[in-house]
Length: 325
Ligand SMILES: [Zn+2]
Image (cartoon, rainbow, N blue to C red; front, side, top):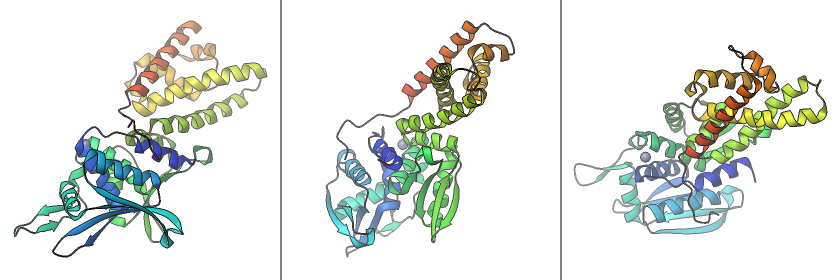
């Protein structure tokens, strides 16, 4: 399975805590996969079309289980999707209207006729909703390269205004992304491994983060251990596995809470561990401002590991218990 599919399957299992977040996520899915058609007498119908079974499953789940709406769905082969199977999800005109109003796409006008509001900004006012919005955008048009092949995550948004809007929402969540044009379509992308890690956490994909982190730390540790080849092979493998765990723990703290959140003595050790991934405990002990015994360093390292474990469990993600596609 591709890394993108892995992330999407994880995102599809996130259970949004509040209805505001359900609407924010649907707003993003509507922007990327939805289309409106006029049905006469001012009625509109909302339809979602996607070749991603995971995105289709998610839309159905949000509409049926969270908003208690009746929806029709069907699968067919479509030429414009290169002959791939495509799922369509269609709402009744009454539910389309209800949902568009709740997402603030439509608002009641003066003469009893609803007015079109355009891309709703209200849905991303709260932090919880911004995360849900980004999740919906990723499910709708996002992808990420396998971490072994380099760091790249992107959203093929299409329209420039929407791409800038997504870039701003990411910025409000402390995530930096760039916008580029590819074949006349606006693409929002990130190339920085730390940004991508934070994106995964924000959207609610901590398991994908662990995989990314694993590849990232293995790279760092391997490089440094190879440089210090004067130890014997057995020693190298032993060092590699414990150093790797330690670097992974420190990286996780750095991603989830920032190293500055640590007590000064722990922060110092954490930074030394990152910068000297292959150094032994004795070497690290000698590098501290106030020298410490090897067992003292080991004790601090265990505290760092405990903090990392605690942070991982605190990640505010609740998984949907039902079967996913
Ligand atoms: Zn919310």
